[in-house]
Length: 420
Image 1 (tube, rainbow, N blue to C red):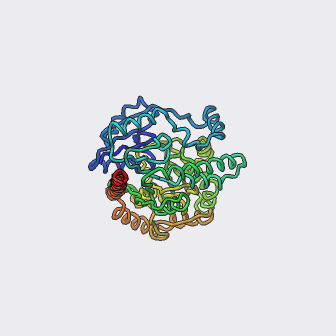
Image 2 (cartoon, rainbow, N blue to C red):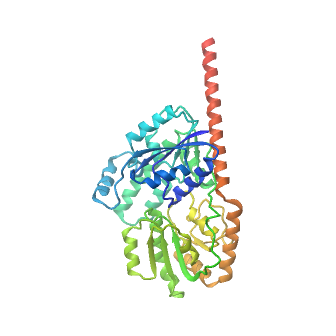
Image 3 (cartoon, rainbow, N blue to C red):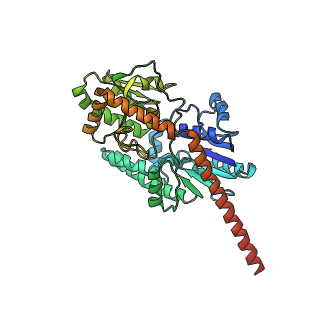
């Protein structure tokens, strides 16, 4: 197949969940399909990112674009102006008339067999009429994320703003999903939610994958039994919320039993509040972006996923499992993943339960080893990226076949009408 793949960012550096999933899938799919990657580009001078695109596509089409940096005056002005927009802010900021023209040109010049819209964001630039079948690849149910932001927010003004974003996201997402020939989810749970909320009769899902060759523990490194680690993009609000929740409500409870416990938070662009918190507490380290998360993971005695807000699935859980790490997670943190409490990881949703689970793992070496070994064996056997890309390709091929069948039926009907 010739596939036109729409995105709002280049994939290098491959440093967050959405990029990792797309990068790994496209690397596999490029072996079997012709990939034209059309994307917004906020760093047109970044030669490295452009050159590395050859790893996952045959042709690259970039559209220069700029979004405002967070916490600047212009950023807050955009948030305020968005109150009168029918679009949620996270969609509005990626609206681009240039990208819309480039998509139309690519559809008629490259003549792809299929268009894939990766995440909801690029859909705002798609034409109303399509000459080929289209697939929306939903890494999350976006409205669910905004609903959970609203539900956990205590500040009345922020809560009102988040409610506004949630309702606009729900309306936009429902409308957008109805425009595509196929919507693909990353978990059965997300697929069921979209069927119920948006009236989509069928939503196939693909599993989450992990690079099992890359994420392996070094036998030469011994973990610190009283050291915790979290990895993730720290400019993503659900990650920040989860870590602040852990540091403020869970960590003090752990310290009552293990006063020397330490936490390392690894991930790009941490918000100022989190950086300041780490300055106040020497036992909490915030690294910012790193080239390789594995050394930080393998030195820790346990991996935490205290996520309270989110959708889709967290690749970080499988990465930690592949590294043979014992994991403590909220149920939201491991949502959509086929993992079992007490077999692959420990689930804990309240501050008290989360602290107790962390203490169990950090003080019971046998339990920690057993969880890590079973988790690693499971992901290595079942969740390599090759299987994920194969299933996604199969879904795309089915969408193409159905589109061609409908087109053939329409032509036959026109001929019958002409004869009559």
